Image 1: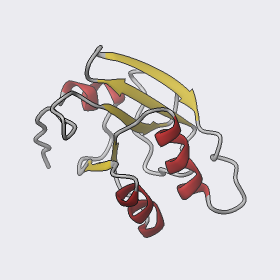
Image 2: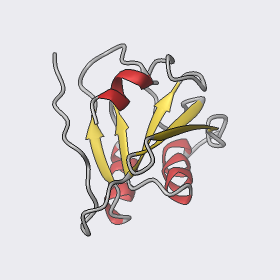
Image 3: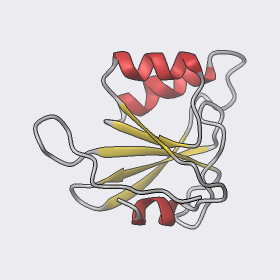
Length: 118
């Protein structure tokens, strides 16, 4: 499998902040297959080329972890989400908030590798 990326731009042409679910707060960590229950999010800012890691407050939710995680990444300024898959509720919510979804089709990707594709 392969992934082709081009720079993700907003409607006004500036680069975006992208949220990526991950298993640990490290650039060498794997992308987590679970969006709503991932342990951390990596936030990559295309403008500054900086990555920050933030614990996912929705990870331990009894229910509604996906939508809660989506609201969280938007509150952190994400304009795109790069993930392996999203559930229908999260997909609908992100679309309603004009947040782009970048599907990662390859297994065992690290955060570094995903960022390197932008």
